[in-house]
Structures are given as structure tokens and as C-alpha cells.
Amino acid sequence: MTESSVVSPTAVLELMRISSRLDPWTVRAAATLRLPDLVAEGADTTSELAARSGTDPDALGRLMRHLTLLGLFRTTADGRWELAELGELLRDDHPMKLRSMFDQNDHYVRKVDRSSYGLLEAVRTGGAVWEKLHGRSFWEEMSADPGFGSGFNAQMAGHSARCSPAIARGYDWSTVQHVVDVGGGTGRCLATILGAHPHLRGTLVDLPGPVASAAAVLAEANVLGRCTVAPQSFFDPLPPGGDVYLLANAIHDWNDEDAAKILRRCTDAAGLDGRVLVADRVVTDEADKADQIFISGVDLGMLMLNGGRERSTEEFRKLGATAGLRHTATYVLADYPIMSLVEYVVEG
Ligand SMILES: C[S@@+](CC[C@H](N)C(=O)[O-])C[C@H]1O[C@@H](n2cnc3c(N)ncnc32)[C@H](O)[C@@H]1O
Image 1 (cartoon, rainbow, N blue to C red):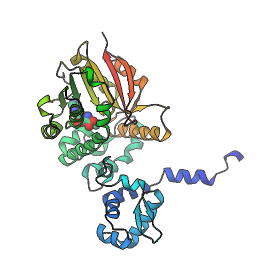
Image 2 (image 1 turned 180 degrees about the vertical axis):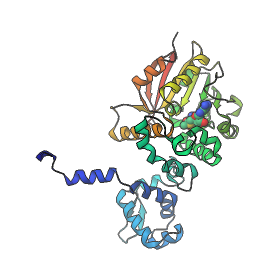
Image 3 (image 1 turned 90 degrees about the vertical axis):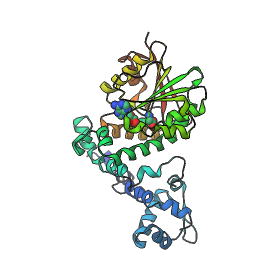
Image 4 (image 1 turned 45 degrees about the horizontal axis):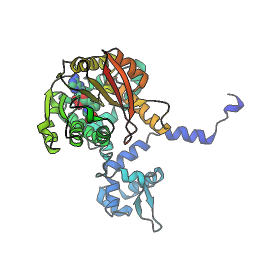
């Protein structure tokens, strides 16, 4: 150690903060116990909050003190709890739908949370560890464990609520007639795009499990009449004739080899006039540091769960080229700048 490496207490505290074993679990406890909702509904003393959440008043008071320091709650002059900005985000009816991401009553959330210790192994091996942890791949888990599959679809519905309106607004859909949503899940994103652009027709492609609920989702958005549903794998030939093949939150699930296979299926189906649009997070050192940390965290999650990755524009350019696609633009979604649309045209 040199003199210049004398330990700074601030650095020690910062290291302890970012490596905290407990902070993530305090937020999960708040979300699972619905503490923000209860406080908002008027349970603003510890005893009332403990009674309404079925918890021990002393332990709950200590949890609330910590959550207050983290910025989820505030205390009033007369010692009552009130919601702070971060706590507001955890209200169950908040449009961002974040509370369910942390809810330990949810089978999917619990299983993914508890698998996070696999990161070390993923870094050692350079690939997905889900299969080693659970005996089957992340995608096989969906059909083998129906509770896991429905929990995943519910999480995707929340994510779709955050990003689909931005996708619907963030692209010039006026030049498109027919959009094929590849790996489109239960159809929420397609429903939002078609709802916002009445001239569009759509085809939804996903595995039989997720598309089983698509008719209800599309009907609720009043777009069922303009949609076709194709229950199939995106590793098989895709329905031809679309102007745009959209892959929303789907390419980042896969390593380069598999991602290129999916893109190649899009290229083949799109034909010479077609476009492929990937909606994913794009790695860039130009984004805010907080956004970069979020994206690199998701990237590690993808590595661990299914061997996928987040990519830079340059990586997307190279990936597309291996599948017969020319990168034409990357549009940051103005209403949801954590995500971008990567646009390709089929190489003539
Ligand atoms: C992260 S979700 C994204 C869903 C949707 N695009 C969205 O943004 O909400 C990835 C989707 O890929 C689908 N998927 C995984 N493997 C697939 C395959 N072999 N063929 C078709 N879809 C698949 C999953 O069922 C899931 O719906």
C-alpha cells in the first residue's frame, strides 16, 4: 500500500453501500408488505402499519427507519410516516408497475431473485447458469412450471406498460402497413402500437404458451380484427409479408449465435423491401451514469439467466450484418430513453 491509497471513510461507506446485502431486501419487504399503499391509505403510525401489514411493530419500525433513510418514506413533525418519491413508485396502482417486480409472494420474482447468486458462476463460465441451478433452461422453465410462466408474463405486461407507448410514439409508423411482432409475448406491445395507429395490421408470433392469452389482450384493446396470431418458434420460418419485423425485448435474451438466427428468420420473411426493428437497451457511454449502471445490470442479468446480452450500436450493426441486415438508424425512445429502436433494412 502506498500513502496515496490510505483508506477514505467515504470510499469504505460507498463500497459498503453498493455491496449491501440488505438494502435490496428492505425494498422487497416494503413492496411485498405493500407498505407504501398502506401508508398512502392512512396507516401512518408504526402500530397501525404493523397491524395492517401483519408484522412485528418493533421490527417494522426499524425497517421503516431504514426505508426512510433510503428515500422511500419521510417522517412528519408529529412522528407519522408519509410517502416520499421512491415510495410513490412502489404504489400498486402506479402506472410504471414497479411494485410487482419486487413482490416476494410472486413465484417468478422469488425464483429469479434467489438465482442471482449464480452471477459468479456465469462470470466464470461466460454463459447462462439457469440450467445448472434449476435443471432446465430459463425458457423450458416457462412451460415446465406454469406459475413461473404466468409470473414472467405478468412481469412482461408491466414492462410493456412502461415501454410500448414509447415504441408506438417513437417510430414513423405511417410508412408501415403490416407489423409482425416476433417474440411478442401476449401481444401487449402489438396491441398498443395498433391502438395508436389505426391503419396498421399486425401479426403476433410467440410460443403457444404466451399467445394463448393474446386474443383477450388484443380484444381488450379493440384491435383483434386487425391481427393474426402465429403460435410458433421464431427459430422456424416466420410468416412472410410484413413491412416491419419488430423484436421488442427479445434479442437481448440470446447470445450472438442465436440472436443472428432469429434475425435471419426476420430477413428471410421480410423480403427485399422489409425492415427489422429491434427494441432493446443500447449500451452507450453517452448516457447518464445512472442509465449506464441500469443497463449494465440488465446485461449481467441476461448473461446469468439465459446467456443473453445488451449490445452497443456497433455490436447491433455487426450482428445484423451476419443476418443479411444493414443498420440504418438507432432511435432513442424519447418517452422512455432507457430503450432504443435499432432499425435495419434487408441488404439488397
Ligand atoms: C422478454 S419477452 C418479450 C415479450 C414482448 N416482446 C414484450 O416486449 O413484452 C421475450 C419473449 O420471447 C419469447 N420466446 C422465447 N423463445 C421463443 C421462441 N423460440 N420462439 C418464439 N418466441 C420465443 C418468450 O415467450 C417471450 O414472450
